Length: 496
Image (tube, rainbow, N blue to C red):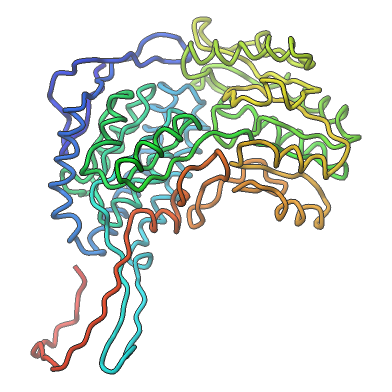
């Protein structure tokens, strides 16, 4: 199977200078070839987007909203097809892929309200016979660079808002699981989106660099690791672009002595090992406040033993493989590193039973206890099914651990003490906080983003921040000395 670009409203028909393999992670076999875009291919996509912008920016809010509503209905009707594509190329189980699409639909639904979201302010008679009002206008061509772990949801954090605000888009998805982006492009076309408004180019650093450097690309949205997020932000801003670059994470879940430990253990396993830990909002560190450590570790260990790991297309599987063999090997290397550093390897994922092809990229859920904050299993974003337990003597010590970490993406506290929870949400230096909620991803009408090394730029993803990021404000001051008359028309006024 060949996976090619989507440029100007149709599949690209050129000849790629380079291609990459797309694997089925559950079998370890190559499932297709993806074209890698050269700088010239990116230029072709940007040209198509620039030409479409000259028309799309003048489309009425009603027209843009109608496209979003139609796209939402098509995506909802075809979500099982998209889930199968995601599972085949990413490896997450079908139920997890379906959950990703459901959260993506929420972001699309937010963009359906664009007529309300782009309302400006108006001051009548600010000066004598002078009115002042504000309007929000689109930027132009914008780039979106999305990661492998959410091949549908993350693009749809950005693309619907960008398009609904009147921009045109060039999306560069991960080359590891590229087919979901093309599927979305086909749905947008079916929904009536004009040719060239949404374009997809596949590839690696060459494509990314051209998007960051192209003078016609006005803004870039990115999600990925912190080193690459920093590179995207610095390179994009150096070339005069507006950039939001969401980076990595080391998310902590603090468990106080008064917490329901069964609830906490369920949450730690769900948030730590869902999607094989390949989530920027995964819990990778449990901070156990004395004296709950022994009991909590025992409960987590018991639950890990019952997890059904295997091919996500098989009934009952709860956790799938990692996305590539190279990534699996990297994550697996931390098991020896953690043990060598002195942490206790409570559950070794290399010995977990697998319901799948032996050649798949497997690593079962892994649990470390007595982890110190100077160990690599704590300091590094592992991005796999490795959960570390750090033990601390008090609530204050737990806060110190979380706040000292350079990442500030998400965190959670498990407690039945409302005062402690309120204090935690105020004192913690993290962008998204859950109280007895392990994965506090905001609903679509708020915005997603962390603090510190988890975010470069001023705007978070989707929600109100998304609308702000994809528009620029203009203030108009006007005076009309003579009234005008448009004539008589008794028909009921219609929007179009």
